[in-house]
Length: 301
Image (cartoon, rainbow, N blue to C red; front, side, top):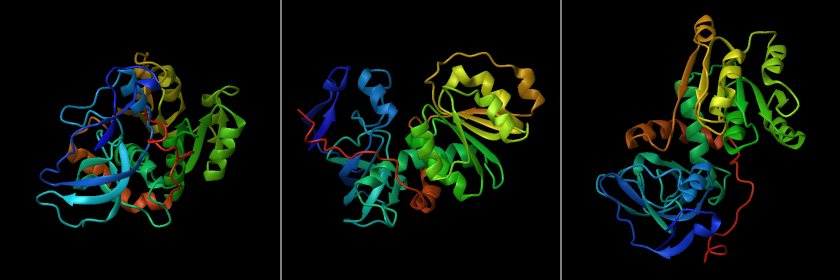
């Protein structure tokens, strides 16, 4: 088969379409013939040499894919050759075939075509595991999503609205905020022109956000704590604003608040399965975040 390899880290030119050995499904795995994959920030970081795959994972980029089951490994039940699926991966989606633990497969939701389904697993499982499984967002609560127009952000808006939460988002332009509003966001904050701490305070009559989904890390740490409601939960899933910040523990204690930080890719397969399972019934309610669908063979060399 062929896969996109990274012989040496670098820019987009570091990606090489090359012939590689076919994967063989092991115990509890299926072989998927890949129809499409998606671009995530982790793929870009891996290409640049900053984010190696976890031990035992495929060396090729691609944290999600869609396609058809080509073969079943020993011990797999509930799936059949030919089934159309999308899958959460630790790597290997940028290839013609990939071996996937059966527990990380999702059926392609009704109304979503096979190619665009490739953009569902990573964002759906990231949002579900952090916003609902870890932070326990409930109906009637307020969720603040940083980067509301991103893939993660657009999925968070849709899932939170589906359970009856109020959604606030930050984004850097009126156009991006308009897209968030189309998906159901209630509170729109342009972080280039407005202070999100003040805006969340005004929108919630001083109560603050019950849950914050943060992709910035250190840069927003103090202001996120200020924005939390009493018993609020801050879920950090990115470090775009740096890795080291100062935390006012007194403010955290005063609000009886909690901070969690997670990475989906590095989780053991069993933990990824737990994140995938609820997504099978919820991802079909939401639009995949794909903005364009380029052909990897047309852009390979």
